[in-house]
Amino acid sequence: MEKSFTPSLWICILLDLIGCASYALPMMGEVTDVLWAPISAFIFYRMFGGTLGTFGGIFNFMEELFPGTDIIPTFTIAWVLKKVWFGRSQMSFK
Image (cartoon, rainbow, N blue to C red):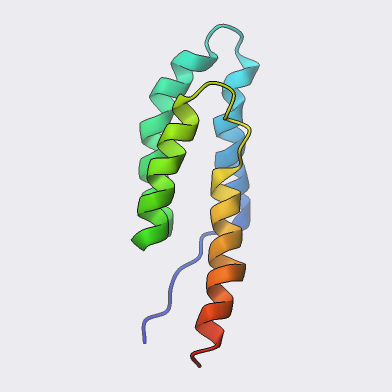
């Protein structure tokens, strides 16, 4: 059985903070979001992989593009899902 990789919580928090950083630049926030959205979605997919990475990458892309939704900590939520929720289902099969 292959072990699944869970990224570091600190990296997930850092990537969420980078996504929120666009609010620090008045008038430039939405422009930087258009640039950050595909990069963030790709990083998300590579970090989490599988179904969570695919669904989360698409969700992350949309979340970064829509105004006012940057506050959602997508990477951190995915870390909790992978570590807690999915971790419990794997423990029951051992």
